[in-house]
Image (cartoon, rainbow, N blue to C red; front, side, top):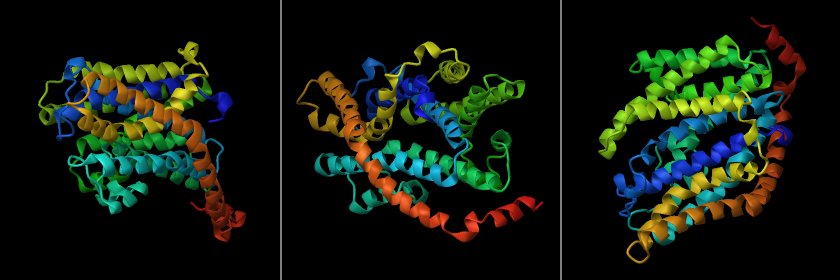
Length: 374
């Protein structure tokens, strides 16, 4: 979105979500499962930090919101270029840093091959069942599919002026049907592309963006957001049951319900302008730090824990690691990401000019004929 229209509350919410997820990994996840670290901080918040999984929903609601604002009056090539630059300029650097740290200090718990490193650079590792270099990367495959859906919409819109809300309502209907037909083979195939576990969050973000631009809440939009919330709560309940078995802990259905409700209400408040007093430009710096912070914190944090435990006070390790992750993220967005983005911009412009030079793709006569087809 243009910087003059930037919603700085979104930047603050992104940062809070990233910090919450980092604390959930450091204070709960790493010690409780998969032998990631023997350093335990459960006494600092193990009983409440485990509910921070709802911040993933916040990330995806924000993504649906921001991407909807981004695709307005934008061409397919512009959107493609902006997303590639946004994702890969920082992602490649973070993958490289994680790879080097793992090679130098990760063993024996964390190992990586050069082939795994190269495949992770493509962001396609989950689609080919290649081990992720960092467990946090799983959300990137979800985001990638959402961006692909947005690009598909822009391509279709070139020939058919379909309203985005119409598509989101259709997506929501399929997401609702999926709850009752999860074992159906067609539903499973559609799930690969439409991500039914997370689609309610994306759809809620899309509808909230429409509310934000129109400055009013229609009944149909309110019902849609309510249904998205119900579906999100359902999927988080399923996750809660799986987590209790996986982590061998008790989780409160009531706390989880109100946590996810709070996420929806806060985003709706932003959408309706109820949190305009939080719209401070300095939150922008926190927002742009969120992406590298999310990508870097997990594996590197556990590696720091494992190498320093027994030698340094564990609370110093924890606080020092958090400060390091935030500082490194700031350095990346302040001094490193811009040159990488400029390089990618030059490469992508050559690629886009080549694509747009394909006659059938840009020929107005062909587009006109396609639009007239039933």
